[in-house]
Length: 416
Image 1 (tube, rainbow, N blue to C red):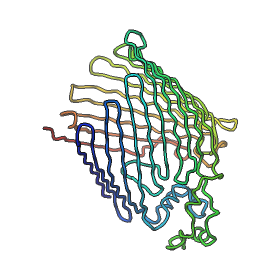
Image 2 (cartoon, one colour):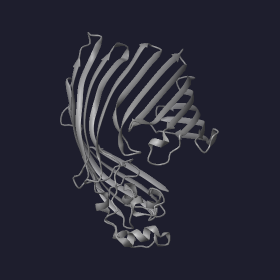
Image 3 (tube, one colour):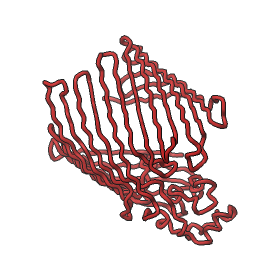
Image 4 (tube, rainbow, N blue to C red):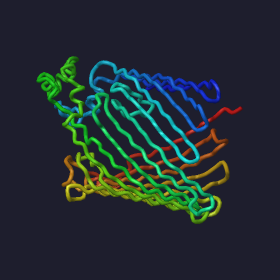
């Protein structure tokens, strides 16, 4: 596998910058080439405009779709959305375009963005996972500051966004509203929620495959035939239309964090509402909570503890309960060196009777990491560490180690 990324920016003046971006990722029977240009313009101290256009050319291994299929990929109905988007022997070529406008002042801010990713656009090194999607976003907020009050910052904000595919079919529409207060002791209170209409699991229709394609897919000896994929109408099979259910999600949450003393900080998140259960393509009642405590013991030692809890109920019964504990201790030897120990534990329980597919009733994993870091300057660092991971599920009843590694990293930055 070969990877290359290159970026060049030219500042025409203080207000205008022009740039180019290139990424190359390739191996046997695969490549992904991305090239683009962009510009940033700041006509005033409050306004900023960004524009980018990118083109990609991609070729995936012919049989990659088999790794993405549901089940054994021996029927056309097993061709899910991910499999269909890499299916075929022809290379994929597509464009992505985005324009962003932002205005920030003392009293308010505004955002207006539009993104368009063609169905055949791929940016495998750029972590762009969404293809065939057009997104428009409008948002903003009003800010009130008063340094004489205990709560010295208040903000009311919200946004509206809509997601459609290139055929104009609705994927998602969302409305959000939040109220935030900041005060002394780095106290923050954020209350809000969202209302979202979103498509559930993309249902792929097999009505647009010929009998010949159905037979070839069922016969493993014929799956390598070069022409069978041409009998599929992939665009029709990916269409949303009336075969995909649109769910309405309604989720509310509150965030509270503070540092009442110089040595301790507290964070609490609680959220509850209607969310899609994508494993079973239905609407469920979700509850999420996260509690985090950080404590500084003297000038060198810091302890951190994070606990997350999540549960989902649907169809009158519970679906799953997930718990995560992350504990870490950092010893700052001096300004340039530290040692960190991290221990994480997760525990997931599932109600097998309330799932469409077979799932483990219980899954647990454990991770341990010990890290030493030496910093020469902010951009030149050296890391060395050890990590250990183990798990347990229905088939492996005892906690079993599945990964142990030693690692080292060195980064060096030339400075004038």
